[in-house]
Image (cartoon, rainbow, N blue to C red; front, side, top):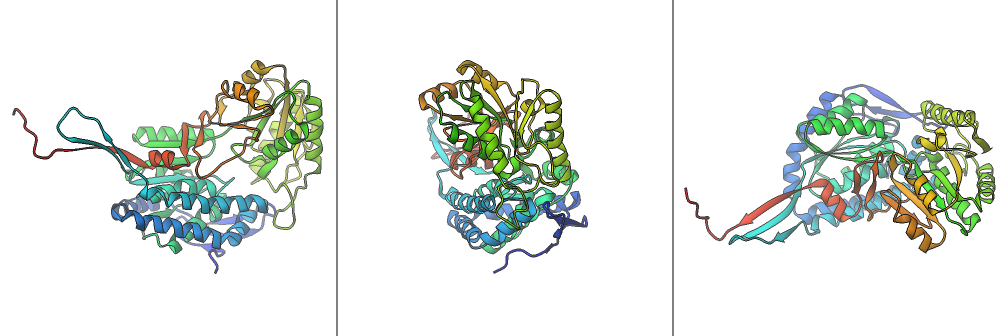
Length: 475
């Protein structure tokens, strides 16, 4: 059964060509929304949401279970689009469809999860705190993991009785938007509850500003997240921001260097480094740093780069020319400032090879900035105190990996400022059951994943009191 086609209509703003980044070929076209389309969708969503929230929990759960099964049934077709539209390798595309199914299955449990508590009270009454649907939720998602980073908000929001306005990145509007809409259509989601609104910045502003919207879930760059947060604050709306990162991987003294270099290569080079959790800084104890950079550079030189739709490669293309120019610029400025290139370092458009840099300091652009490309900057440290200082010397606070002795790793974990800490794993990791988010310039906390975080994200707390009879008042 075919889920997707090559032309997707909807919206009054014309069409946008879907381009394969590896080749420049046009894969199809999508209809573009306008702010007027957003206004109409928000009004429809608010009306449909009221009925959806009154549905039996079992009915909402059934839709989410069916959606999970459909991601499994259509996995191969959706993966093809992720490979070609997002420039992903086949294994990475498989991670996305597997996660999409798992997220929907987890979300299917939310309608029957306890949604409140009995409070103590000094009055002759029952006092309850219950969670009620937020209403209409806007989801704004990026290009890099287009399916996961949209469905992780769409699925729990729907499961908890909300309607959703989904604005995917235009570069991945099929695998990050159309596929989600089609799956929920097939799963039996009632009309009016999920609206796909691909568009430009004006459409993004409209899905934040729409008066019917009560919660905004944004994943993307820190710069864009600041604008979304400011707009939401003006409207007194809750906003969940999952933003950028410059994540550190710490290799402790005595760690297995071969295993550590493998972890470091995976953390820096998976999906061409275009992940908010990418390992952007490698901190290696001075006793092993030479061995580590040699092993990491060797891996970088051997990893195959190319079109993932045509062969078994480890890295695909950078998403577009602008991002390729950014990666090139950061590396070039770092080299000009004294960094040594031990592997890679030169673009071959639309590809950028796995790159290892050494000889950096605190001011090096590759050390300070989020690169969002396959670049592994490596530095040495002397002791645990210096490692902690270097990890925390960043505006970001998303993910940290620590490799080596568990006891020492736990000591360091107590000192680092990060939304996630992974001991004996690299920095990239996510599960449907785990809360996800960061601090500082990486966002405003862990807002997605797991029942508790999802319920807090997509419902409001209502205080409810009940007396046996009408209370007596002195007036």
